[in-house]
Length: 86
Image 1 (cartoon, rainbow, N blue to C red):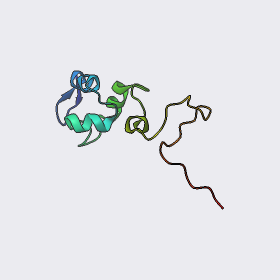
Image 2: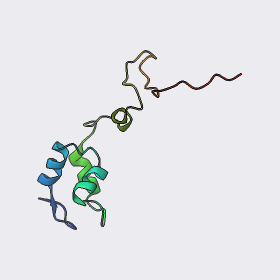
Image 3: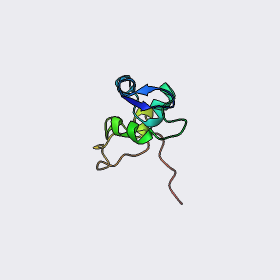
Image 4: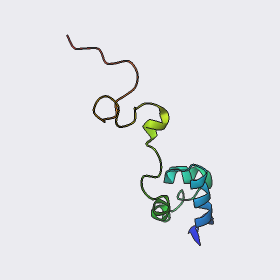
């Protein structure tokens, strides 16, 4: 079944991109152009992606620590601490 009729992208192609690591509609658009013309398929793409299947971008980029770290589970920026106010 076609998900994006503008570019002829099928549900199977979207699922293949997800299996290859696509996590967001933007990732799917980069891989296949789906969702970049009329936008009518974006909700269908979001439904195929589901929820919570991919780690947060901040974790992928190494900017945050995973939940459960020493500060009580809140992610915090990684790197040098902010200077203390005088």
